Length: 232
Image: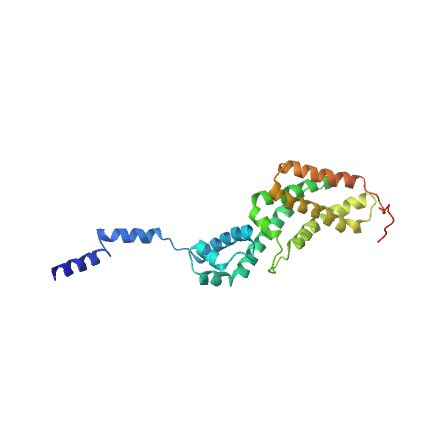
């Protein structure tokens, strides 16, 4: 009976006193995340996975495993992979829109073009994973729409200034939305190429974009026409 009594004593000691310290230490190291912290962790993991593999090739099991949680935890926070993806995309779109619209402070059209180009390239440089996600064809609808609609939102920000410039030059200001879409689209498409190329450096890319756009704008015809035979 003595050995049994000794074992029982050891077991009791493990919960308190000196013998209990290792258990307390293990518990202290296992920091429990709050709901908000867990949500952010899952968003970060999902963002990286979606950027590397795309929506279809990323699984809830993979996300849960990397977070060290069970699948139900992911479902609890986002309702599934689609919900997680939608939140990731929505955040990235808002980040890009805020960066571009926040940069448009100049009154001169050429400087405005420079600011728009730099803002987009800044986003690509700082949030590369996010940009890769945005330019993919999204299988999930989100509140802010698609990348194309985001580009349209950014173009809207420059319409007014472009319209004033058109009016000052004697052009039809009603065409400002068309030119705004064309200019912003040019920068966005160049950005999709630059996200992988990364050459030349950012300032040079922005300078060349503005060079093409501005010198084109500087020599606009009031009423452009096709010189070929095709009319439609």
